[in-house]
Length: 260
Image (cartoon, rainbow, N blue to C red; front, side):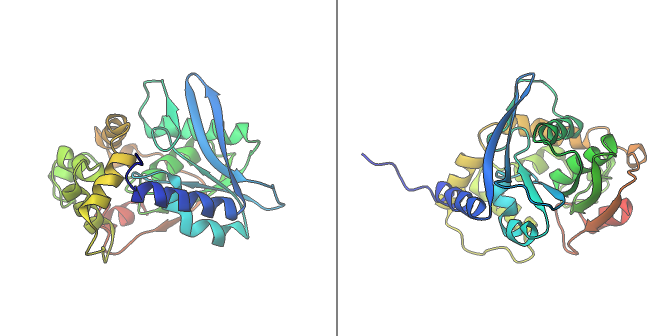
């Protein structure tokens, strides 16, 4: 008996083919201490600067960077890792902070022989990119942060900066377990969200991309917010570009002005 068709598996395979055809290959590296990271790396290293692309919450890195790899590949050697608890990356260590993610990414780049690079981080990936720049200023050259609320504070939820006022509800939308919550996330993520997506596709995506290691990802989100104050944010020395959507409902534009 054949299995049911999975739209998510089909799209994942399409992205994989796209990455391979763009001159990238899949590498799985053991970093030690029970940590493994997956990364898309160049098949051939050219005489170009290195560019690290760090994804946000959601599916694996391929789903979030497929549209960018071809335009960027002409000017950069591109590296696209799956963060810990996404894709094929995992750890047995207890740390759940963005600082730990940054340490793992840096160890990954060192093991790949990349000593200097530019970094682009989107959403949660921006938190990791910012800490990477702060912790390793000699390695990180320039930084691009895309819609990443790095300077948010715990009180912002209660004070009404976000459409959602409590963390539990926010987590249920950011890491949805139901088709209804995934639809809500899509409406918040897109300026013009798709109007008609069959619920069976949404449920399949949740099953394939969200449920596995969801609890660990919940811990990642908790660490982003709990006890955070903007005044505690370190200052980075690299030239930095901020990119934000005027109608962003996940991390409102006010956070971009605050970070600037």
